[in-house]
Length: 192
Image 1 (tube, one colour):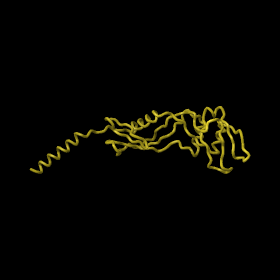
Image 2 (spheres, rainbow, N blue to C red):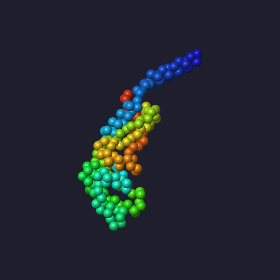
Image 3 (tube, rainbow, N blue to C red):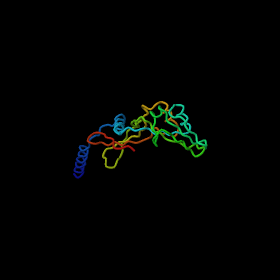
Image 4 (cartoon, rainbow, N blue to C red):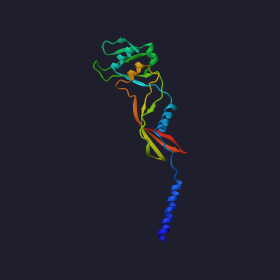
């Protein structure tokens, strides 16, 4: 008799637990990627920072973005002035139209300067990995996935795109997105 009562109570608890559980809708990779991209698209567009080494400076001259206008007596400092095409493609961090090239020595291979693209774009999300269950503080149902966050070079002239692909430039990063189920729909909880 006690076993029957205990069994009946167990079935009632299990029934209540199952009745209270609602299955979460599926979160596909395409849906997750769309949520991430929507977040990026809602942020203000931004320029891309391009680091230029000595080789990159030479490529910029060849591409017609700047020209050598002054060499200093030490023979390794120089000034480069942006051309009209250069002014349409890049802006300098310090403003103006003169790149001040100031390495430590003739053999300084680590010196670089940065320029910003005039073209403004949103980040792009791609290569989303498998979406899996996660545990997040304060969230009852969560999922997460790794993906690649990359810059968008749309509208950037080809010569400047080539410079952006030189060593020292980071055009993409591995990131992780967390999703939470809110009011029956998946939302982007955060990106780390």
